[in-house]
Length: 109
Image (cartoon, rainbow, N blue to C red; front, top):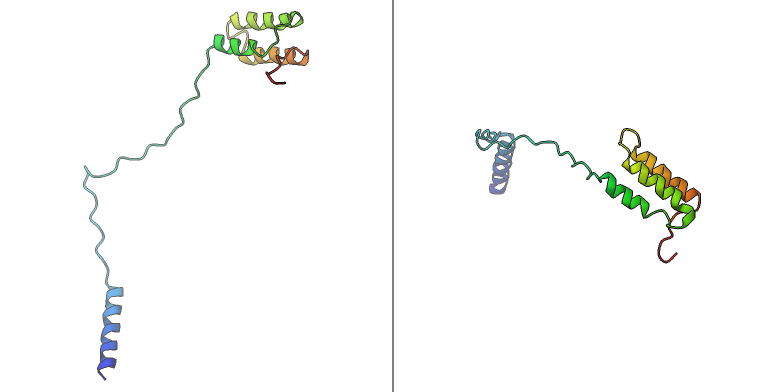
C-alpha cells in the first residue's frame, strides 16, 4: 500500500508541476536592450580608373603591326570624355581585335 500511495503522490506532484506556469523573464532595461540590427549592405565593388582599364585592355591586344589600328582606337577612346565613349565601347574594340585575330596569346599556348 505504501508503494501505491507513493506512486499517487509522485503523479500528483508531476501533474502539478506540469500545470504550473513559470513567470516570464523580466523585460530588459533600456540600457541593456540590444540595438536594432542594421541590414548589411555589401560594399560597392572597387572602381577601376579609365587609365588602368585601358592599360589592361591594351595588354589583351597583340603588338603586331596589323593590330596597331585597334590599339590606336583604344587609346583614342580612352582619352575621349566618358559621355562620348563608354567602357562598353572600349570592350567592343577589344572584341573586334580578337575577331580580327589580334588577341594576345597567353604564355604556354
